[in-house]
Image (cartoon, rainbow, N blue to C red; front, side, top):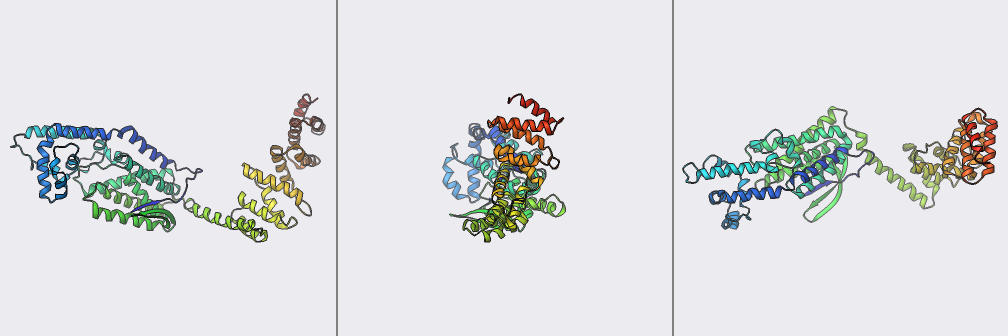
Length: 492
């Protein structure tokens, strides 16, 4: 059974920096240090056979396996102990019980005629294994160096191992980083990796096979996600046999499914699989405990950010319903829906645009005047907002009944906007009206200079000269007058 959360797209306003950084580090470590892993282990295997270790150990190992009742493996590969292509090498180096017997002298003792040769071979094998990336920097419970508690989190057993872990890291990281922020996520990710390693060692303290992979730390994100989001419903993809689907369920339910799956697999398959189920369980439990401590013991959790997707989905549903009424030519039924949305999203351009379109069918109504005034009070900080303001202003001047109601502040803002986005002919009446009451407008003389330059660009040289002269006459000894004087030399 596969369970992967796919709950939200990347919010590029708050990009998951740490999630991306962790993925990048894992990929770079694999590309920089592990692409040669297969050849490294192949060289070790070649040494194992050429040094005579295979000749000495494998017949005894085969007999020991048969005595332990592992008949299927022996029956299938029993006559291939001399074949380097067979799985005997991988089986013996990963068999903790038999390796311990070898080290204790219970298989080959000092009285064996080839004891010294075997001992030298074993020392050479250990040295060569330690020189490989996985054995040298993976976490081996029986011989763990302190640094391997960290390094093992960034090593992987192959491309599929890496890709699978990175997929989970991204999908879970998107959820957890938005809730905790980059710094807290970094600390809890590493802590989860330590917790995964701790349980792995606790349950097999004499283990020799190295633990590698980000899955323990990533499992910590499972625990964090489950506890932080609690009863919030998140969307996830699941695959069981040949059946798959997307569903939504509370995060705590998913945490139970993830943990239950790992416990079941550990009980059922731990003896048959190289997957470190105990590390996964340790990571989940560590993440869950850390998540509970952060959520209930600190103010580090951004509850508003966690609810943003739900708010966005609710917004889109409401907006869609209102636009459906508008598309069905039912403005009187659409307008109340937009008015209700405006109370929750007063500055949202899409909502205000809908309210404007639903109200313009009644140009004498208070609803139409109010909708336009809301739009004209916006700050034109982006193209979408500026375009809506210009559209509403033009419509209002043409359709409003009994007449448009435009205050000084709005007029000043629209003059500036139309000087940037409109024609000289369109903005000229507004500038001329403002020039009649210059004390009411901040810097109207500068707007007049901008209009005159706009006339120049549009080939209206006479109008430009007239406006420059007006500024010189009525705004003497100002910066605008000096600009007008210089400009007049260009338009004679």
